Image (cartoon, rainbow, N blue to C red; front, top):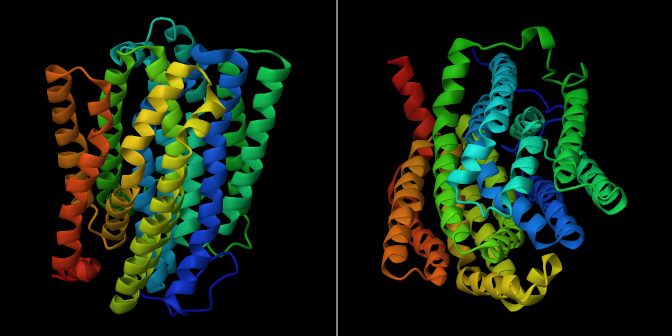
Length: 461
């Protein structure tokens, strides 16, 4: 059933009208700034721990990053799939379907967060030992990881709420809530570690408290009856047909994120064999590299929502123009950050840890990969366009084959032949380049623009 299109509610944003470029920039910029604060959120623990608790504490906090991503990435991808469904129905003006999708993803988020909490807390030692974590670092890493996953429900639900609001064109409120929680996290880190002199576990507690605060703020807005698509607690449940749609678009994104996370865990486990200095340097590089993801993530989220809404409204040329603009913007900004990272690598690493060995490893990795951030941006950007067009299985297969299988085989081979850490660093630009070639061919040759239309025709048949 199609509803008559009305003026957008103040808490939503219709991306099917107006100048597509200014619309995308206006939607992407709040996401960009929210990602800046998200990166501050992720970096504050490492900076403060490195300063107050030394290399062991820094290695414990940063070495768990890849494992945390592996554990959470599947649920984050599923939330992205829900955003595609909500955006499509919002663009088509189907209000009832939008409401059903929102309440279904809320139910899925609650169930996923509870499951993730149990798995993360119970299997922490097993995972970290499997990753060959340095014995000197292991006790602190277990402690940090377990406390972190006690807040897994808040982590999942914040991403669910953000996906819902972004899908409806509201990218400002997630920014405001994230700014508050990021500043709260930094204040708690300084208080717990610098003031009370507690251990690395307190950094995880600060993160959990901050994440919970952001979820409370999100839910206060979403349950407000003045909101056009208000969440009602009694309606939160699994709607079978809607759950199938969310999983259809979300599972590929979840699997894609998971295989990337799995490959990164394999890389981390190989890095761990070189000792705590290499561990601290690799984790530090990941924190710094996160800033290169800021334009990638912001334009990708904007692109997915923009493409979904416009394809839902059958505005194909507008969707194509928006996709092209987001890809070029993300590539240009990511490469600019890469050039800065390359030039200032020693100074950036020393912000976290001035130990000569950590600086040496960190600079070496930065100057291997930083100039190739434009390839990273291109691959992620085309993947975002595919998700927005309902072609989520395409990036899943590309990432599974290239960023997981090829990357792991390459690392196994070079470690067997040389045992030199520098070759591990090259795994990233090499696999970014291969996936970029595949994505370029697909973007130019495939009919991704009519993905939803073909789905409608198949459903009608």
